[in-house]
Image 1: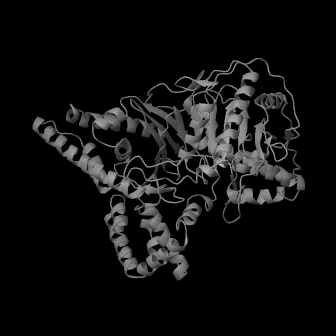
Image 2: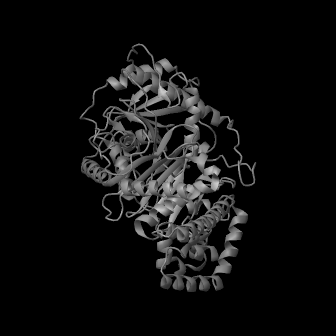
Image 3: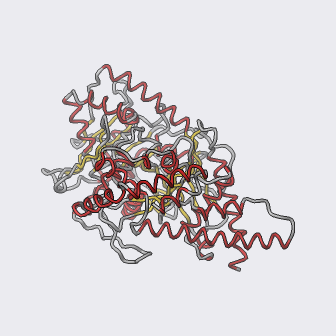
Length: 615
């Protein structure tokens, strides 16, 4: 509770903080101790006492649509295609590598990872990796749930779903009767046939229904399930390894074009399409006129290959965190080395013409569309288009310096960037806000993430000092710089302490969630601590951030988690730092390009502050 009050201090008014303190005191006296005892009892009988509550609260209870709000997208350097044969061959190689990775998981042959810092060598839970190809999110009227498609043992069946021109196809890779993976050449020929199949107005763009809010999609899914053929199709999608989305309609170069903000280093591009444009394609497809109907957002992994070379993945986030996906893709790239090469992973296909042949391993999914669904399909398309239009997204590569310089300052790159984000927010708004940074808790069985709260009192004091106008007096400037350094050191120490507490299982947010849920179970009601305005403010994360490190050049992005907030994913490189920043145009108080500019200004000011210390 004292840690909770400390987290509230920099984001509440004095009156709000006094009221929150009285509620904390009340809870600590009663019923807090009995609630804590009940949690300890729960821990004694469960592998992970918090996981189910955390999963419901974070993912399965919210009714928001998945694209932008929940599911992140990531992109890699574009692949270079000369013709459809190149697309078919590259996709076939990717599918083969995915099947081989699934076989590795089935053999439980994935080596156990171990912590590389803070009590080095501790084993990390690998359960997320084993859910990559065996999970499917099913919408529900009250809450969603995750279907485990292989609950007892690995299935001899392996198939994927291919989406192309808003139509879906089942491609059987292996089965109990034919346990050997079909050849890469046969996969390529089938993909070539799918690419050559013209779009049909007779097939309704059903994929767009998966973009609805979850309760409405649950109702429409029940309508679909009234037909036996639709039941078979849905089961085929749910039990597939992945969805492979072959996008034949590139986004125009002016799609949701960003304006203003710092330019930064050159990133990925396809002609005039920059990486912000490409990230939109991976994140949501671009809308009903482009590729949003060529998706099935309930599936955990959607690999996206565009006709112009765009390559990315859209992730349904509930079964696992981004790091599991990134590490899996890096393994796939090792298998794809004959097609992927160079530092930027550019595709080096050099194939002859592939003959299009539909084999018995491919089955188009034929749907029986009830007439009342057509109305919902149109409404879903319009709703998705509106959400996409509202998204304000900006990929920014800061090229002033990277983690090489930061490490010379004897600071963790993650801590450093988090403080830069606090400084940037303070620069724009003159205050700090509740900040979420995901901290891996994989040192614990079924551990996922807890929340590093970067908006500390120490960060506030430092940011306020940095954003003050300096005096013109030389002696005064020197004193101010000394004070800023002292405040910076205190902010670094605090942020580092909070980070360590979280990864070692001593963070406050999962514990608070447990106290809240157990309180409801034990007393039948919610304590005022959890209904007070202070608790709402503490969990209204106007800054939702995460670091997803990768050995491969990639950009990951997601939308803000609140209407008036920012999403910010970052990846420090030796000489630069990549940011994916999002906001909503409908918010009058946020703008992604302005935040990117404030981040640049903050990183530059921090370098100027620390430069003399390391010389």
